[in-house]
Length: 504
Image (cartoon, rainbow, N blue to C red):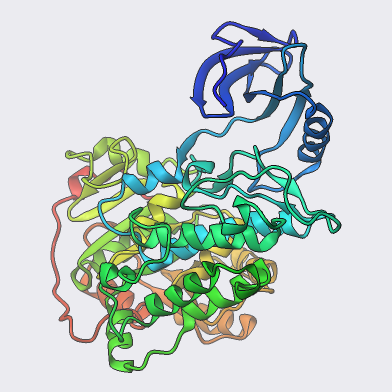
């Protein structure tokens, strides 16, 4: 149903929302960006829809439902204008800046990795699980790449609830049969009522779309040939089994719930290979991640991260250093000093630069991080500063090596103890404590105090860009679990000392 819009830039809706620009149009709606004149020009998305006669009550009921929803993956609806005499109605919801999943995928230069696909799918499952466990359950019914937005922080959001409906036990089939060809389940075309398993079919279509780089959304025999899957690619084979079950024609042959899908996807991550040698080879070649966090400010977190990068540069195909905290200005100062700003690839040149073979990026988005981490043969070092928020700690514990930097000063020992208490609920199997310039008496004392032997001294280094042989050896010792034994250690001297301006 195409209809002319009543809005244009400059229009005022409800005496409050001033239309700033048109965003998009579909067969059933127009979407605009508007500023809120009562909330200091806060931006909202305005969705304009025309209703057909007799549907006003249903539309108002659905609008009230959407306003009740509260989940980070879903758009927050804050206002509703019921149909006017011409049938025009308006929803006011969160304005999300970013790109659709369709556009994001189109911008990739290669097929997304299994890790990236699973990360995206996990966020979709979060939204669907919330909807399906609502009382009564809500069926989204239009899960597709253009209805999913990746915002500026790299988080995925659902952006359209045009045909969502509540499940009704006493209703044999849907009164409105809608969906997008290629992603809609067979039952959406009539004869049955849609339920949670309808969304699971669309999830399977979306998964297939992701791993084929947007080429397929319906199961075909040539899928495995397209992906060049062989018996040794256990993760891909396991994921295809999950997708095939999701795409079953009969709802009863699919998974029962999102929770069941989540468990199946977990098996993709840990799926045993029939060829252990191939798996070990794949594990050794993937990009490794080291996360560096300080127990408090001023302990040398960034200084240590830079030393790590240049100490390990000969062991990896590519080394990338990411500054994830908003509070630090260290990378900005380095970028000003660097003679050759800009790095080729997906990163923004405004936030990325290279110094003597190490790539730097300030505050990358989640999706930019996934692009880097999903490669092969590289090393990514996360500089987390002294941020101890829940999100940062979770990023910290996910790394292959989690390096805690503390101070050798006796009056700051309590910072280390407090940090350990703060993170007591997390597994510390990959944690290593590094204390710059600490004498062995301090190391022994802290080992007893913390009850761990994984606490090591690292040398004092005036210039982290030109680490001494002693520093390189110490850093290699700290990171020996991720350094390939078949790569020889070679020492390079870098000429960056003239550009360094003080410690970080």
